[in-house]
Image 1 (cartoon, rainbow, N blue to C red):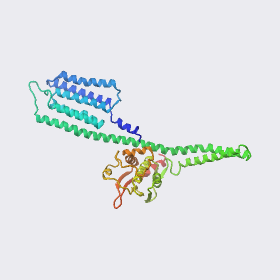
Image 2 (tube, rainbow, N blue to C red):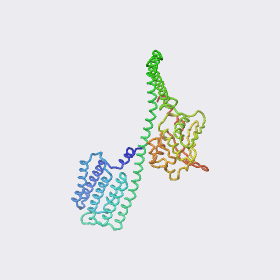
Image 3 (tube, rainbow, N blue to C red):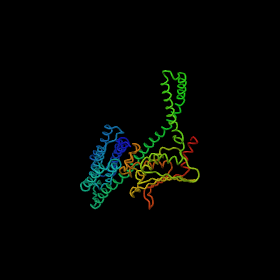
Image 4 (cartoon, rainbow, N blue to C red):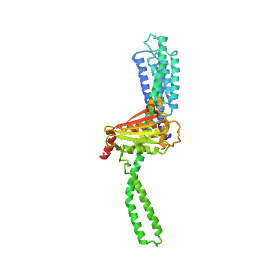
Length: 447
């Protein structure tokens, strides 16, 4: 995957939209205004009303400024977004200072800007915001104006209780911040990996469609080329061997023959199961995905056995790419051989790929198939990647893409190590036979 392409999307997902920040702040402004007005006018509690609304007005002015300065769809870089969220923390802490500090039950709202940062921004600005919020929370524990209360009465909460609130806020900043970041990060990785899968599948589909286009072009060119060949033959007969143009006509006839050979090869791409809409037997499918790996120094042994007629399916670029990736990995890590076994019954189709390499390590085996979990080390035999898209493997996307594309065909993929006394990795792909053959049947029926 091109870093300037696919991974640009990943960087964009870690940016806050101006519209999101503005909408959230308007909610905060409305909520803060309603709370201050309700306490002052509804409950009749004395508080610095003018100062509170001045602080709230600053947030409203900032929102207006952001709307004027940036378009709605603008995504802010991490530094500017963190600065704006830092202002939100400061503004809320000033309000809390005016209304009782940590004794105010709304003090837990200090967590909100940090949570927003944890779900969208990178870890560093989130950590800075968390530390900033923790420092201001510590200040509010000791320095604040009285909590609004009925006239003539003063509520003073015990220091132990205030300390408990302080500890709860700090622990919540740490725990919920880390938790929100982990969950959001996993969601981002999955979304980016699925986007990479779609790009790979689209590319494979385009390559597969070239066969059909080449065959169609060869078919269309066949008739005019036959006419040219007929005209050249008649001219050659009419001119005779002593004609000045005899050599040119012979050369032209030879080139026409060469063109016919080329068109015959192109036409063969659309026949014998090689066309994008034709059926592939299980044996042909295995040979197609294993063929590109036979040029290396690791022999691939293929064994087939089953009950009844051999199953067949329609050509599927995603399935071919996914199985090819599995065999590619097996060849990379094998010590001396790779075994591919195909078995079918009346109800199931199973394909097993096993190498005699070191196998999967326990920590990798538990997470294999998740995005950004890589099993590759340095290329041990200097094997060149088949395509530029295989660079995704180095980012831990190769196995994920293979698994995703194969499972789209209705298969179940299992990753294990070979049981003793042997060693090596084993990948088993299994289908219900009716699912494996369903696509082929649909194509045959013209669905």
